[in-house]
Length: 337
Ligand SMILES: *Cc1c(COP(=O)(O)O)cnc(C)c1O
Image (cartoon, rainbow, N blue to C red; front, side, top):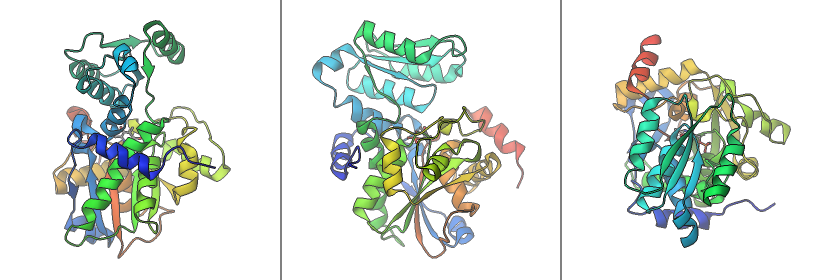
């Protein structure tokens, strides 16, 4: 079966993103290396524009729309990072964006999304009641009435290819770093699978020997179960602090890539996530949101299912840093060392 994207798609995405997305730093920590016995390289996508890797995929998708599609505008539904990524990408390209968000989304997120839309006529945040209104039906109606192009958060080839540029960049950066070289393993968090599918395509092309491992929250292990059953398993919206990975199922396009290229999926608990977030704050001086800490938590806690990575070079994607500071403080306060 042919996969939805190839390495060429990732390489083209990287060219489109050049000078637009940040080439985010790669962070290392002696404490982390000692604790894990591995040489660990963190790709700091928490420092990406709008605070998460999602900018890569959104910009790559919006920039490939036809002139007509751009004139009409784009539509996205999300209460999280995809909303802000779409609003910012569209504005940079002069494209109107309509973002559908639940009425009970945090006010700060709605405000941030509106701020990214500033100055583009026709851009707006449309609020809906997620308990009484059908989001799919509403978005189809909006798309039809206004001629908008819907860009989904993960199940789209241009989104997947854009996300893959994070791994391409990391592998190229590590190759020339002190103590660097070819990565042996890459740990990537998994929601709907856009990030890991793009990253796996890039990583396996550049380093055929590399093992790519996915990490899900314990409560939301739909992709792990899907791999075990060989079909896309649907679950109820999981209860976890990792809000970027509260997806109910992986995508029609992302899942076959995961099946073909990913070595396996492991899970971590919310408590393990908070311990990792604390370590990033204390030792590396960076804010990582709960979902962004999935890969690191799996490595630091040596969770079941992960191979022995001692003595190996391990890349970890820190996927995002968008967490309300008051919430961040209260999460860290709840868990002592
Ligand atoms: C969206 C998101 C994820 C999950 O990405 P998928 O492409 O849906 O697997 C992980 N971390 C952060 C910070 C996100 O915003």
